[in-house]
Image (tube, rainbow, N blue to C red; front, side, top):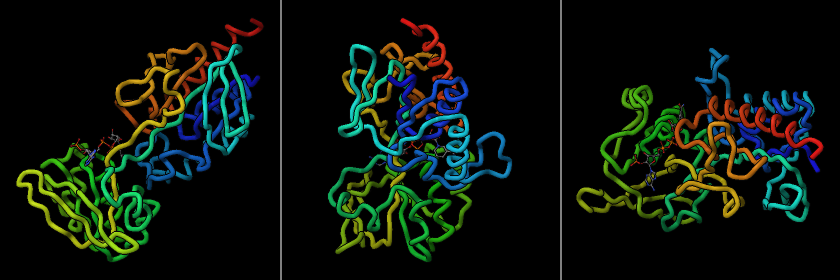
Length: 306
Ligand code: NDP
């Protein structure tokens, strides 16, 4: 039996690992194949306290990992495929491998949402992307679309103007829900245009996306648009599939926690975006990761020897 298993290697998981390792819980952290969670997909993180000049997402993740390992966290770069309740506690499955513990912190985060329209699967990574930081570079002097009206869409659109000739934000409403500072940035950017009340209904092209079919939601009119690339920034879906039926989830699939990051299961805590429907910030993920680890430590003391 492990003293503590942490599932998920984003900012909340690493923070939990740092705190738990310093408390001698020798956490085993499953990070998935790509260590680092959503921050690996961001450019400059400007609002993480302590970095007045900003810090690159991947660099912040490397620092967190290094810090957790320094205190004895054990890192397994594999994806957890199952989660079960057993008599002694909980079993975490990684393919055929089994790990068990009485205490688990779930920090599996959330993944990019897709539109779910024809052609989407075929073009993933071929003109259709969800991460500007990862793929923006390929669009030097090109014309691209960003779909969405939130902070992510604005951030991605701004970032993409470093490369692209023109970026058009396609949004299904006639105003952005993004924060004021983000809105102002895109509105001031001369390379950014807007296509309001519009929805992409189909992707077209030979090997990669060449055109999109766009519907105006007010008039119902559809038109084809020639385009070099598209970046979706329409929110995220929590990674909670493996916990369904065991851990209580809300109607959108986010884990329900109380103010102490406790789930409905004794000894199971959740932290970060997987349970955050309000703030969704790196710093709040770190904060809840810390809370979960402190609660795990308390719980460990309570059940020790039982
Ligand atoms: P949001 O949920 O805030 O926004 C998603 C956007 O996508 C909305 O405009 C929504 O439209 C649109 N959308 C959703 N589904 C579809 C669909 N099927 N078709 C077309 N459009 C769709 O997600 P974000 O990722 O932008 O932000 C998540 C959180 O992270 C927020 O709290 C945000 O503030 C934060 N964030 C902060 C950043 C920062 O401070 N640097 C950077 C990025 C994110 P509609 O408006 O009609 O609902």
